[in-house]
Amino acid sequence: MASIRTPFQSESPILDNTAIRLRATSTVDAEVLALIGSATFLETYAGQLPGTAIIAHCLTAHSASAWLSLLQSAENQVWLAEAPNGAPIGYALLAPPDIPGQQTTDLELRRIYVLSRWHGRGTGQTLLKTASRAAAKRGARRILLGVWVNNQLALGFYAAQGFRQIATRRFQIGPMTCDDYVLAKPLADKDVGE
Ligand SMILES: CC(C)(COP(=O)(O)OP(=O)(O)OC[C@H]1O[C@@H](n2cnc3c(N)ncnc32)[C@H](O)[C@@H]1OP(=O)(O)O)[C@@H](O)C(=O)NCCC(=O)NCCS
Image (tube, rainbow, N blue to C red):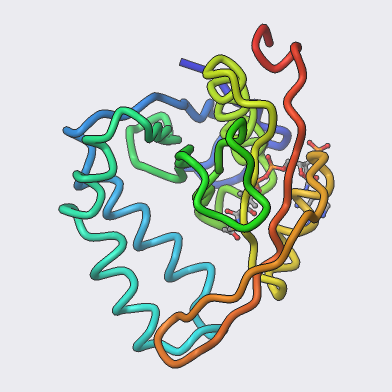
């Protein structure tokens, strides 16, 4: 388990100077991933995407059965970030690439989400490092991902972490056509050993 720094102390007894934990998941975690997957998707896109599209997406892509089938494939790796009391606060999914610009030696960071209340405490960075290390161990040379062109928060985060744009893609969420930047980050030998 990796510990994550807490850069500030809070008045809140819930956020007070406590360590967030990361752990690899298995099929028994499908329901908790459905919960944190839906919660973070709703929180990220409420007000930006149509409500019906968000709800439809959560009920399908973030159903427990959808997560179970993801977890049943050995090619997918999912890490869960948890508050010290065990509540899920974020997750990341590493998967074979299905994205423009991909090469055979790439893996894709398909999802990385942290509840906003926990942003800025290093959780996203630790999830990304953990996924990068796993990808490098699997022999990947790059990590790819797709990010909505309007998602300024994530774009800033990825730029700070060394990702650069290599392509674009267009996708449909309900009635809305969305454009994504496809970003890539080369993996170095140090990613295996860190
Ligand atoms: C992107 C996300 C996962 C980052 O998680 P986080 O836990 O807040 O990020 P961290 O605290 O680990 O930040 C890591 C570093 O990135 C930097 N950073 C974060 N957002 C940034 C921004 N908008 N611009 C520049 N730097 C940024 C932080 O300053 C920090 O660097 P530091 O340690 O040198 O200070 C989180 O913002 C999130 O879940 N967003 C909503 C979901 C989402 O959009 N996911 C991506 C979909 S493609």
